[in-house]
Image 1 (cartoon, rainbow, N blue to C red):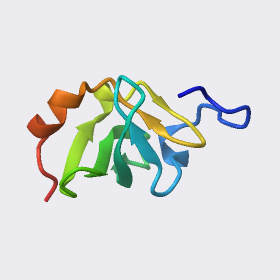
Image 2: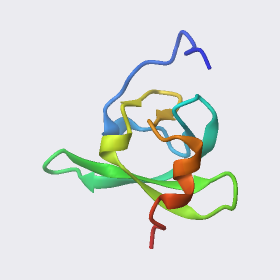
Image 3: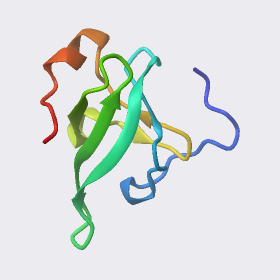
Length: 89
């Protein structure tokens, strides 16, 4: 999916609420529900994603998120990796 003209990279603290989360192929895998991190020390741990398929909430670690924009969150996850993500509790 091509980035729109008003889509630009932002810091993790500026992640849009309920942003679509994309896999490495550019397909939407779910919606961001929560940012995990330490705001005071500016340490980003990851996000909680509600998966489109199945609806479970999983944690995506920060090192799997190369880019966050004003429109969506991009991950480097392959579609078959989604089932292996830890459920968020």
